[in-house]
Length: 413
Image (tube, rainbow, N blue to C red; front, top):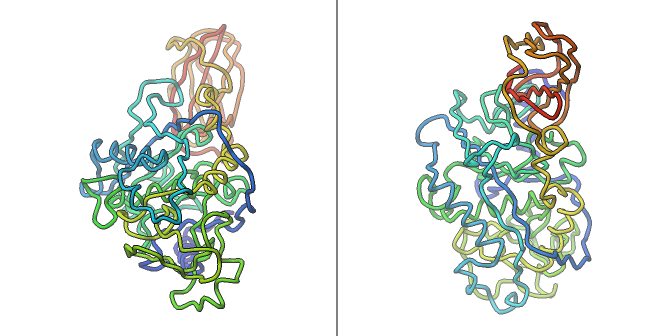
């Protein structure tokens, strides 16, 4: 859907009001089509490792993180998703035997989609204050180089995390559900996780009581198809248990997290807390998918693990495919990389001025998701002009191939 620029702010405002986000409801992740109950026993053969690219899009120095802070967040994720966090001993007795090792590891990517060595961290200055809440023609500026943000790497193969000023009132994070991508509600170029810069990692810009990296753990839970403990709709703070507890809308579709209609937002409770008496057992308020302070969120359950692994197999198979990155740009393993096939003279508004340095070249133009948007063949050496679809905008990869050799060049259209 294309929005006129004058309507973007109103559309965003309506979106926010429709979900009643406030200072306590600090996660803006919502899916209009949560997948149903999962009754599988998802037992992975071995743990997987997900490559991560962190886009730190900053308006001023206060929003620019250090590499140490970014690396600390990766460490938190590996602790939390492998049940290796030191605070796991806090879990109340009722949930001790439900703690899950999700068998998911995270690592900063060591190569970009073209196979070049990389740190997995992109520092991208922007001239847009509050870029996380800025849209152009329906596109979130944060996720596009040409709109002042930072374009995703192949979202089928990498977990893209944008760290910036989200500029949503009271919102510290957004995790894109896989069902939102499958349904087309969210463009693939915007798939990933968004974190407010003062909620990311440990130390640095992170601010207490949300300075232990659990906001990112929570939002990646959404990215892997986990709902809040109370379901997809946040119960009102004064909701009568007799009314809310039987309502099926307040359900996270996981059997071993007991029925819960309190969010405990900004709190750090302890002991036996039960917002739905007579519905099985106490609230799992120590779960990462709640709203408690960072120090009090410490676990996932086995039922959540089943749901996550089902989502990986159904919606995010690229994260399970060790060859995904190699196939990201042109669909084949990387041929010999050379720099003597062509020269790029000019690129703008769909026009490419090129010089073929050798005859019989096969050309392809790919977006940052690895999808081909144009292809052609040049038979003669020399200069020529190639037009590509006018709808093609932003950063792309121009690829020329001949006899097992390939030259790749970034182009901005």
